[in-house]
Length: 185
Image (cartoon, rainbow, N blue to C red; front, top):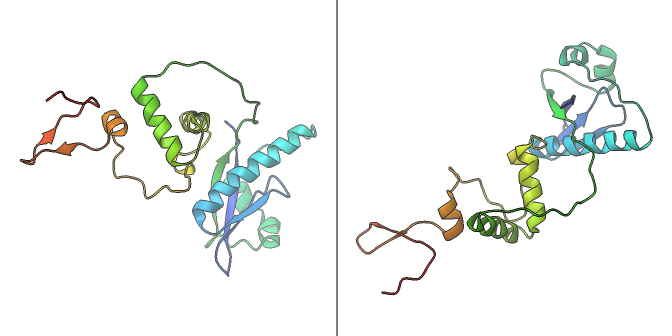
């Protein structure tokens, strides 16, 4: 997958500006570095999509060394390499049209996906699409956050915990086995 180097420049008033030397006019910003990285991926995807729509050729990506040694560009944009940072940003494939598919999933996995989606006011399709983008490397797992997400758990819960909730303890402090079915006793 192709990538272009984004240059992250800290602003005096806070936040970060993001520039792509190879793609004049492709720029964005973020209140913090995480937001700037996320916005860089969106800006790059949008710039590439528009260029493709108009039939414009995209230049090949420069190396970090080529960018750092372009004194005219660095001076024009106020880049001081002691403070600025750079990172490769992957070019996402162009967005296609939605396509209806039929898939088979374990019913407990499907319930866990539906629970995840409902908590974040998403459709099942949106949750599955975001997961697929992570698996395919189109976005990092940290790129997928939604309103209501708290800090990431220290370890991801297993299928049983996602489907039935955390393990329960009995009167004597021992874990009680839960199956998701009501017992007859």
